[in-house]
Length: 216
Ligand SMILES: N[C@@H](CCC(=O)N[C@@H](CS)C(=O)NCC(=O)O)C(=O)O
Image 1 (cartoon, rainbow, N blue to C red):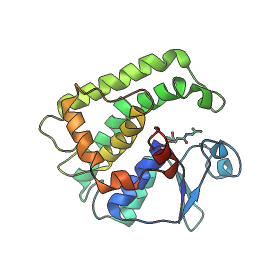
Image 2: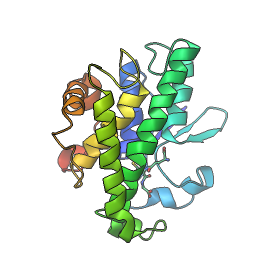
Image 3: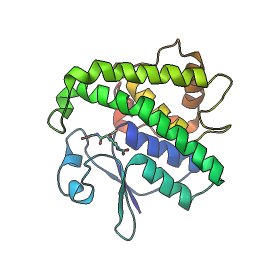
């Protein structure tokens, strides 16, 4: 099995997920900033053209971060970051989906159409006029989640889960590219500090990101 790695919040969240489970995999670094992920031979394997990906020993090529994490959890069920029971898994998936739909998808699109436009306009359809609205949507999602986090240590359940890791990696990245978490979100700010203190947070930062302000 081989992990196709790169700088960026999505690869980082899988690295953090693996660090929480003490999973170590051989890695192949793809030059995301140079666009290697948007050209063959990578796109022959992953037509989505994005990072990260996981190549299995039988040649199966998995992309999409949450799918990769789901697969790794099946191979390494402990500690359970998605869930040990059907109900736990369903609850984590529900919150992970909400995190994506309410926050990380609009936040990422807002970045690609805004601060990231120069890099992304040659890679995908970009909608610069939508950037501010998408960022506003993400801020509203954060405010909604902040209210729901009152009295809770983690997003989905009493322990860290995939939902926390997805949101943490994207928010840590966002802070360096013009979308910092507003401190008025007090519950989420406290949660963010707790996540940042986990050894997996530091362990999952990419060497390129260590050097610059873009954390991923
Ligand atoms: N839906 C994808 C999104 C992955 C994604 O956006 N990856 C970014 C890095 S954080 C990427 O590959 N960016 C470079 C590009 O799109 O060319 C997933 O869940 O894996």
